[in-house]
Amino acid sequence: MLQPSERERFRLRLNTDGRPHPVENLLAVATLVCGVVAFVSTFWVAAHAISSWFGTLGFGVGLYSQYVSATTPQRTLNIVGIVGSFVGAALGIAHGGFLPHP
Image (tube, rainbow, N blue to C red; front, side, top):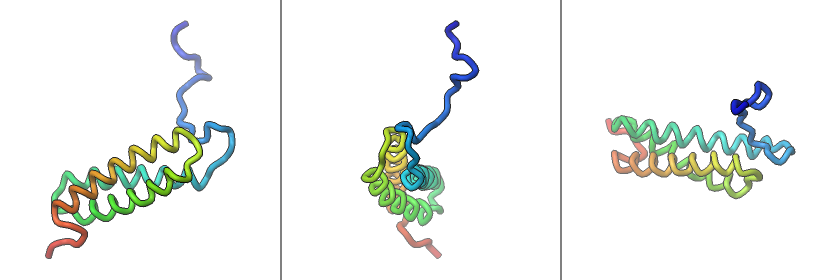
């Protein structure tokens, strides 16, 4: 009785208000992807250019996406992506900046 029924499975829904928001959803997912790529690429110092560019792109897109977001799940993805982008950009710049070393 305490387990959820088969119909009540967890599903990630970005449109919790019942209206479609395709542009806002795309921006939120793009922010999250950029943040994950920027953060993960900081584990390799040689990938500092990837981290710097994706971090900067994700941070800028994330701020705009947060501004136009319509639902709480979109805002959650935005914040996670913005934080990952910021950390990735900061460490990428610290490891060598935007241009690869020869």
